[in-house]
Amino acid sequence: MTRPPSRAYRAPCEFYDRLGEDVTNELVEWFNSVDATYRSDLREVNEHNFARFEAKLEQRLAELKSDLVKWMFAFWAPTALAVRRSVIPQVVATDPRHPVARSSLAFPSPEWRGGQG
Image: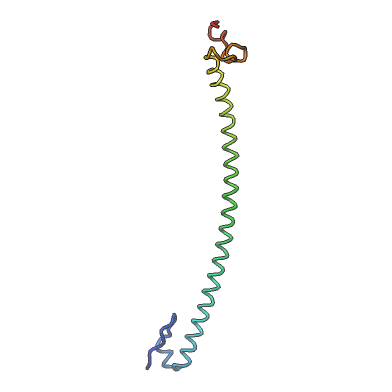
C-alpha cells in the first residue's frame, strides 16, 4: 500500500484499502478544495466584519471626543469665570498704582477692607 499524499487532510488507510488510491486521492483533493474555499470565504467575512467594527468604533470615539470637549468646556468656563471674578479684582485692588484700584469697580473695595483708602 502506498502512503497518501501530504495534504491538509489525509484520509485514513481504510479508505485507501476500500476505495482505492485514485478515488481516495480525488476525495481528499475535493475535501481540501472545499476547505480552502470555506477558509477564504470565512476570511473575507471576518475582514468585512472587522472593517464594520472598526468604522463603528471610530464613529463612537469621535462622538465621545466631542462630548468630552463639551463637558470640559462646561466645567472649565464657569471655573475660569469664578477665578477671574475672585482673584483678579483682589490683585488689582491691592495695587495702588492701578487705576481700577482707585475706582468703585474693584472688589473688595477700600471701604470693605476697613475704610482705608
